Figure (cartoon, rainbow, N blue to C red):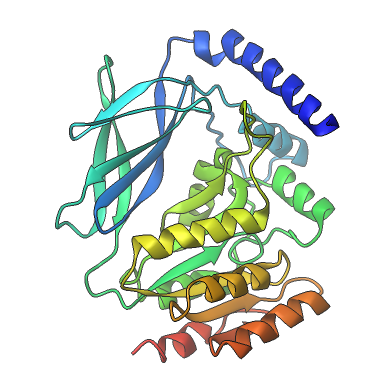
Length: 330
């Protein structure tokens, strides 16, 4: 009852703020997200805002400046009910400004650039879409925090400190993760998809960090932490990651998957359950062991994965693991 009451109050407050900010601002700007492909469609994704918040961080700037810049990324002025179109397909932004356009798929493979227009406005925004190569052998799903990007997500305090006091120039990507993304994708031959509980507000920030480090590019599945009339923030970390895996397996029905994560945020549980939901679809599970390593429950989940016959590799870094998994890909 208390949660329901708080939800109602906060939602109404946000509606008032929206009317005072983004909804009254005449500007309409598309923030493109990286899309993906199904056997039938190009899935084009993005968000319409009244302003894009971009920072130009310096490596030596203070933690306080970093904090203010990171907080600014969460102060989005999203715009609802905006009509967009691309290649004859139209769509409408939802109450948080998000949109998805399902375009007919062509024969083009690799990176496809789709021009998206806002109805009644000049100019277009290019939204990239990744279409798996015809000779792809596997598909890869990778967590981000403490898998690719050093975060300390296994500790809430450390996670928040790292997230809000660093910037795109100072955040550390594990060097072995950079090598791993190149090796496991065979330098882009195999598609890779990133799944994280971080909010969509950090999409551009994460792309900047990955690009600077040389991480292989791929569509990212983040969470909507906004509040709507029917939801009080989205589901759990496991729900989000599990449902994203389901979507990606349906999008790539002919490929087996390598699920990559860490032992700090219960990835072993999520991946075990995905294996059980999709028998025969998972080639291997690769887990980093950050901080103190897996707890007893995570070790039990890891044993459950082994019991299914799926290859499980784990350790403090990913050295040599891509070659081992690909050795089974055939």
